[in-house]
Image (cartoon, rainbow, N blue to C red; front, top):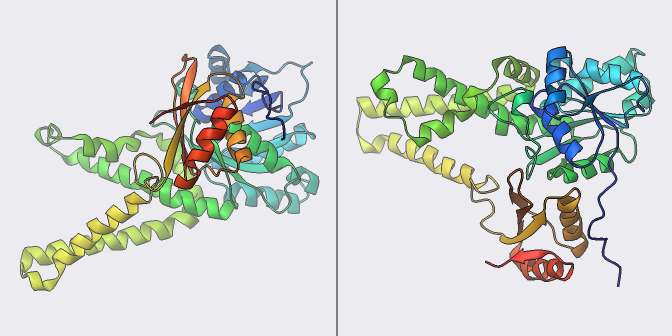
Length: 382
């Protein structure tokens, strides 16, 4: 029988890590990596933001005698990400350089163009890897950074044809240590996916919230949770979203065009009902179909807000708040031979333990429960 991994062996993460750009995502990555024992250095175009990041514990400013970073994380908007990545590739010729911009194709295409123009070598480009931790808040800036921002969230890794061997495995390791779920996909597929699940919702939420500018105060007093839920992300940073939407226009326009057609169909149906209430016209059927299609769509969303996990069993495990423990749980789940379908974490900063709710196919529930208990994990009943 093979020996189980030591209970407190933490994965060896790259160190030091240089985070360029200390906003919400960069700051949260610094806090999370620092909590995992990584030496984190920070750099920002704003000296004041850099100082605030240091005061908040995100990391420290690099010194002249510091070792070069093993990993550089560029946390900047898509319009400047490629330039900063290129600078980092040149400045640190041994480092793996990643960006965390929410649009991936434009960054990769810019870097390929620089390589074609002789500004970067093939070796330089092999050390670049696009990533996108799918986490955020409707508030921005390093002051909003949280070490637990990435827990249970997808962490997208976008390799290209020249990506250096081992780079994807290294990023998987980092994502797992952050408590994220690593997902590997091509840059173009990533952009098409986020156009539908992130960027279009931002546009629609902002449109809906913009309509409230014309509402009377008495009408706003009637607002309920539904309005709050559907407009929450409308409080996002306009400067950042202008760059994100513009950079992903190629993937976003078809999605918005489809929604525009559906909205026009709703307006036509309502207009017909208003002018001709005859039920044989079919307008009611069109409206009912829209609502029913919405039911089916929301049921596909994984996690607690949709019913995508209804077909799965859940195994709840106590996880100590120590570096490497969540990574060890996910690694051992794979060693047992069970595929993790979804993950939800209950954890608050300062608590000594958290609870990981692992969704698996029902036929694997008993196996995972038994084997995790045998390896010393505390599995909760019920």
